[in-house]
Image 1 (cartoon, rainbow, N blue to C red):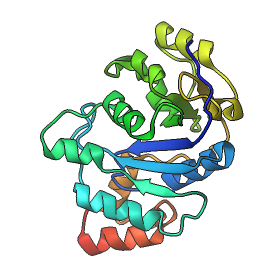
Image 2 (image 1 turned 120 degrees about the vertical axis):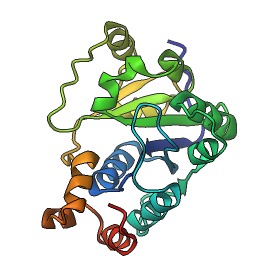
Image 3 (image 1 turned 180 degrees about the vertical axis):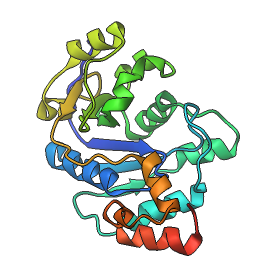
Image 4 (image 1 turned 45 degrees about the horizontal axis):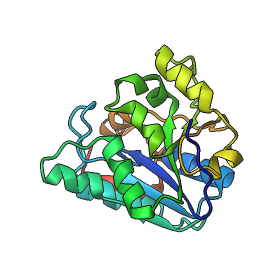
Length: 223
């Protein structure tokens, strides 16, 4: 499998559209940070995801919402990395493998690089651009969201995933090539449903969005 032991830092990467940022994102970051004890959390808002329709909030608004949502974050050093947004502004396609290769070049070969993804993303991993190469650059950690089966549709992905499966502590010690599952994420939020509720001014949205983010959304009439 080509696993290599990390001798130094661990960086946890959480990417997404963040359209909008919600409590599920913060809960995922908190849960994985407790499990992995990373030296840094890197949040990477997407530019224009090629597998999704156009985003509602602008890049600037999504970055502002991220800053507000994680304003009180003290679990570990945090960086909001805008590389995918910058590529989109240059009208360049942005794939996860490109982002992780960029991070690997920045962080060096000795850093344990852990890319967090949702269970729904794992089920579609076989559709990702150069998905096999992800294992050569980073570790992959999946948060098992409620209601999602981890019966991976693609036999190729399932075989690769199972062959590399390990515990989160062991994953942290690998620079790349490992996989792990974090089964304790109890909060499931659909961004699509959330945007609909925001448009309808549904009061339950107050429970799903950090209050400063909700204030920002309302002030700027984003949804």
